[in-house]
Each structure stands twice: as structure tokens, then as C-alpha cells.
Image (tube, rainbow, N blue to C red):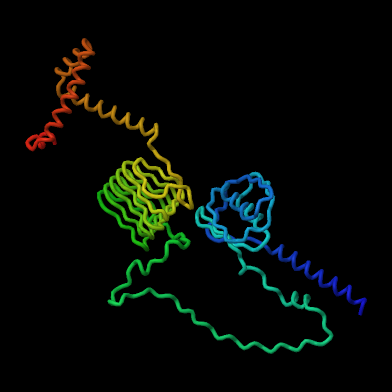
Length: 375
């Protein structure tokens, strides 16, 4: 009896060590969602950093927005150069089974208990202590009757009418799945366009009309001389641009590319998702921070905008001078000679004329008879 006791202890310790090694060997990260084949390599160097904080530092270096539901774990040391961020993530999460769900640049990490391998019959038999008595046979388990799964149905109003769009529409917070087909291009001039909730189109170009997006645009959308509105269920997988109109982004709608507005205002919800940059020359109403999928706000009121305005005003003055030379050539020649001979006197007369015209305009505006003349 005393000789068998050390052998039994060594057997139990060996089984425990084999179980630990096998659990570490099976630890992996299961990827779900859209993971690009090629990503920009990153470099990361961390010393004695908790595992959850290391994942956040990796997401910051790779340009991701990460949500970590897993426990922080033990500290790790990281020193990598020019490696794929997906591979670095798999190495960081090597202690347990995890699932990483990706939607664009948004990443969610949670424990993957469902994928843990179930203990086999051989392992159970190996762990069980040896027994001299034979094990009685296990009675057969009766078959389990199938369970009927009841699919959720849309709520129908008491009045008997059709279910409303707000009741049937799925929540926009769930992960969006790209459509199987990219749809067709839509090019309109002088007309309004409405993209339905179940409609899929590719590139959209509209001149002189408004656009309402309830469905999916797989390409880019451009609106000139009109307003663009992306509703709660709308999804633009490319860029969105508006020239000479307003851009409205409602609810939890999603735009994967850049957003640009010239000659109009941008109004966006704090819950919308913008994957690229936000460029506007007007007012930007909404959260302009660089949070989860919000993009980076870039104001275009810069030196480039001032140069463009100066070029436009110079071109208008050139056209106006050409018209005057064509219609009143003799008078313009006399004016040219007068300005060349007495420039200071001409400049003073111009200043006096502008001030006098402004005074007359104000005087016309404050009188009932002069209002039509001022207009």
C-alpha cells in the first residue's frame, strides 16, 4: 500500500500538468466580422502592463476603437516592430479563449467560453482514480424531443393597419452586414431622390435636388445644390459630400468614409458612426470628437479657403471690367486716362462715392417710399 501511494500521487500530478498545458495550447482568438487581409504594420513596446491595457494601447496604435469585456489578466511585456496588429492581438490574448468582433474600425473583445473544448471520455477516464470494482453500465438516455423555436413577429397595431416602420425596423446598434450586391448607380438632375430602407444602390450623384437615405449606398454619394439626409437606418459605405446644401445625419446611422460640406451646414447625431474625417466650411452641430467611429473634425476655414475666395472675387472683377469695356468703351477710356493722370484724386472720389452710396442705401431702407428703391 505504501509503495503504490507515491505512484498514484505522481499520476495525479502528471494529469493536472497535462490538462494545464492542453488548456494553454487550445487558447485562441476567434475573429468575427470584417477583418481586412492586409493591415498597416504597427510597432508596440510595453513593460509590465496589464493585458487589457496592452490591448487598448495596440488599438490606439492601429487606429481601432476597442471595447474590452474580458478581465484585465496578468501583466505582459511587449516589444514588437512592424507587425500586423491582428497577429499582435492574438499573441496578447493567448491566456484564454476570446472572440473579437469587428465592424469597420470598431472592435469588441469578450471571453469565448462557447469555443472551449469539452473534456473527452478518455480524459475523464484518465483523471478518475483507479478502482478495483467494475463500473456499472450507464443506462441509455432517452431522446430529447425537438424544441420548436418561435420566431419574433412584428407588432400589429390594434387598429388593424400595417405595422409601422419604427416597429418593424431592426435596431441600428447591431452589426451591419454588407449586402450581397452593390446595386446600380443613380444620377439625377433637378429631382429629389429617396433610397428606401431595403434598397441598395452604388454611387449617387444629384444636381439641384434633395436626397433622403433610408437604405444602403455601397459607394459614394455627392449632392450639389440640395440637401442630404441620412436617416436612422441609412448606411453609406463610401464618402458623403454636399456642395451648396445642408448635411443631416440622424440617430445611429453609419458612414464608413469621409464627410465633407461646402457652402452649407452639418448637423449630426451624437450616436452616429463616421469612419473617416469630417470637413466643413459651415456650422457643425453634433459631437466632433474622435470617439468611437466619430471621425476627426477638420475646419476648412484656413489659408486655402481664403486663397480660393480671393481668386473668385478677382475673377468676378475681371468679368465685370470686361463687360464695361465692351458696353462703354469711350467712357472707360476717359476713366483710364483720368485714373492714370490723377490717381489720388480718383481714389478719394471712390471712397467718398462708396460712403455716400451706403448713407443713401440706409436712408432708403428706413423710409416706406425708399424701400423698393433700396431693394
